[in-house]
Length: 395
Image (tube, rainbow, N blue to C red; front, top):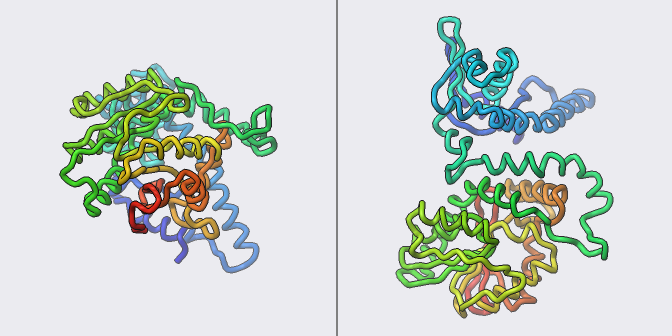
């Protein structure tokens, strides 16, 4: 059975069908093509099957358009207070009734809304699982990601061809880092907070199992910390640790507020610092680079590596959480596939890349560092690094 047919079978069996009600036992991405009805045995039929597969990719843009339009119109905020019919929601939002019904049915088709029918009336409900992700203010809200799409990504993807033709070099011919504005960076960092918990789970499990700094005090430096969630979640796991997050002024304000909400403000310090221009302070035990290097050029990655090596304790560790390609020859794992697509996103939005593990190894060696372990996480890999000769390899 092919990977695609497995996905299709899962999507089919992930629903419970009953008269007037359609429920779903999981919220995985739904396939839109039933490949069980598409033969792959002859040349022409193979082409037809391939056309369906490509079409399914091409219409992927429907999902963000429908979801983000619903957010802009206030659909999720309205449904967070009550379930309702398309007519009720349209009257409440001052939108067209038929068009509102079409939008709501699109959200249902993507599994974002639940839909029930009784007595000739169709009602829509926002599932509890999605509330915090679709409403503003929550730690794992995607509203910032939607704002980034609106302000940056939609137009950037439209100009991908120009980026492929000319690259992302500046006037001097050098590759440039991703020049995202501070406002857009604020939107994006808050909109990808959901990445952090599973990554911290993997990292904390490794550190616990290896016995590193168990029941000891340890200092963490969170470089380009964004909301600070990675280091703050580590502080929840390790009560004797302290952390400092460094970033731009408006971003540090986000991190400080979040530290208060999570109850770790007494052990988290947000520091406004340009880490390209100034020293990084005292020697530290653990340095975090969470989703930093994909925004950089090879030269800027090497500069950050050297700066990290300068302040890393002799037995310290660096954790790089990013889109890292491990199998360059056969990049077929979910992490490798996502990294390749993420690199295209970096290209579209102005620079950066998803670098290969072999490239990281070269940069580490030049900074007097070496790989300790590579850990798998959703959409990411964690590269653990130490001073050369100080840690046994565990990968």
